[in-house]
Image: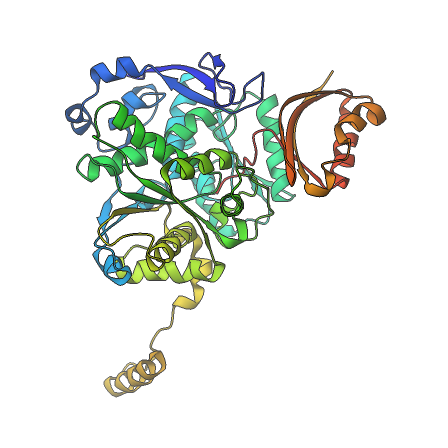
Length: 412
Length: 80
């Protein structure tokens, strides 16, 4: 069952009843889910979790909604792969990749959307909605279809065709907004205020973001109930980053982990790095930027959880790493060529940050390091178009040998 | 009366400007600051603005011309 107790304001601490609200009425601070941890402590155990389904719902005691109140798409419990080849390249003996691209719609967004959808059903909503530039639109559309909800996804009209199709296939209503990213943003905020729609990333945001905690739970469980020494996480709004940290700490507070001494490192691409910028300047003030990055899934110029992400970095003595844009595609290839994992641009950002930290000697060789890969590479093939360089040959033995020799010389 | 909740983010050069005061003086709006953090180099204010809908829009358009960023209080909602 769920042990949700209330919503509370992250700024002033005021408590609110459990409702589809996301902003404190007094100080306009963001609302967060509060739980009855004493009650959870009495029922939760490693054994109980291990006997649960192989999905995020094995942790439902720690989520704001249960599997039974809605649908189960089989999200979560994704592979934690020991990256021996990449580790060898970088001089790291205990490197792991948390490969979240194997979720039902191929990104970590299924975790947050699964929780938001079930909560929306519990609240009696009939319409599921979101504002997105790709991954989220696909996930909301799929969950809306499964839940038989009216589903609306909003995006800027110049979005790549592949991403539009990735949402369209599920039969949702696509709303292509003839406007800039900021204009879509404003429209959706206004719609969420004026319609009884469950906007997963607006009025359902307190519940939605809790889904990300399951990445922290899973990694700890998959490592044999221990926290990693270091997590490297991509950041857009900063929510995923803070929730992985929250997840690890909840397990410790409930007695399921002995200790959590994890460095939390955050990665952003150079073209959209407002959190890194603040970190480098030694301030908690996140100055909004206009995103200009090939890592579109990280293109949030005014990150809602930037302040809290910076607090987490400070608390854990972690780092914030700015990744040069050309390294994004290069590191997508590096991960694919060493570990056979094809990630999207956000994964390229994480691997580049990992490499940078390893090269600078910030990561020691024996640390247990987890790099979070949050989406599948097929979502962003346009950035690696030059990766294909086939050997062209006629269909005979000699032609092939000659062509291969030429290709080998060129590749040296 | 319509009410709008917004966040203003100021660059260093605008910190000394009485932007919020002008909203009441020049646009016939009532403002109510809920939270703010203003430093030497930048600042932000989250506030509620009450008044005629067109007047609010005109005022926010004017604020945007002053190199002050205007956002919904939830931050960016468009996600990847």
